[in-house]
Length: 461
Image (cartoon, rainbow, N blue to C red; front, side):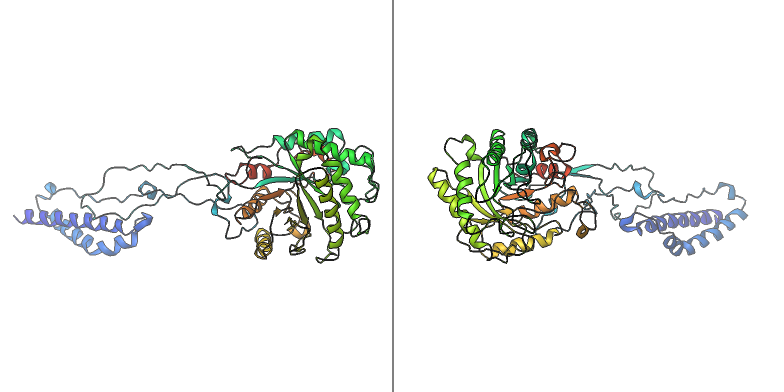
């Protein structure tokens, strides 16, 4: 009788250990980990009571018939706990420039992420130890970002400022071929490119790729102008459009700032080039989308060179009218930070400022918004950071593919930007722009491909 009573007490003590151990397991919370300190704290008295009881049992003659104890062992592998998988957001590339808050988190390309596994808080503990082993399956989810912006996206342009001044016939053809063949995964492609009529960093009478020199703004060399016409025709032949910088303005760039293009010869120069390239028998004239005034000058605060540009535009528009050519857009390109120049100018249709190669995405957004908020029409950003350009202002670290993608997305997310101009350092100033194609290897550069591939960012021409 006494032995039976003692055995009953021992059994109850064992059950107490089971209940206490399972309860201690629940203390792990979301982490699914067992707290050893909690087990020791909550079961110390019961364990001691059990030990004393068992000593009494062993002293009885029927101790051999006492039931064996069973102590539950908590799960030692926290990953065996199941829970709801919650995908972890992908981290931005360390080299990417900061993106304005207006840019949606979909700036990154599709990213494969592994969901983190969390254990839920257990329900009411069972007095019986679990004997089933649960295996957690980790799934991989591919997250495809939605379009950067709603609508039809921006037109994408390339910069090869020197292609007319430096490339020969084969170089021009190679350049337009490669440009026209670049395509994104959803069919987006490049609309066209911007170039300067004259050499932008050497004397305007440095020979071009055909061996011809420009002459002067008062009397441009017809052979040189024929070479430029060849470039326009090659672009049109591949379905590309062009925006023509009439004379690059800036330090030692031999146009307005140097006095070679001035109020006395500006009208005639504008009339001469537009008459030639918009004439009715030039079948490729449709490719001319815009005429671009300005350049890199920092010596024009928005008025000094205005009289010259107004005369160039007057000559262009008179020639277009005489040739029955639908008016091409008149744009103005600026040095970085000078986007507010010529706001409200009567000769200007829209602004195509340069935010520059030392300007992070947030600053560029602020500058463009400042211009837009003034009531000016913004055609697009005509010169952001070139892919692979390495300047001291950027810490001598090449601008990465993710940075040029971030720039393009930021401009698209403004909601009023119709055009974006991309550039690659290998070819904007190449000795033979066509030879470099889209990058130094002739293929589509990684950053350009990212821009083309991003859903909704770029439209087809």
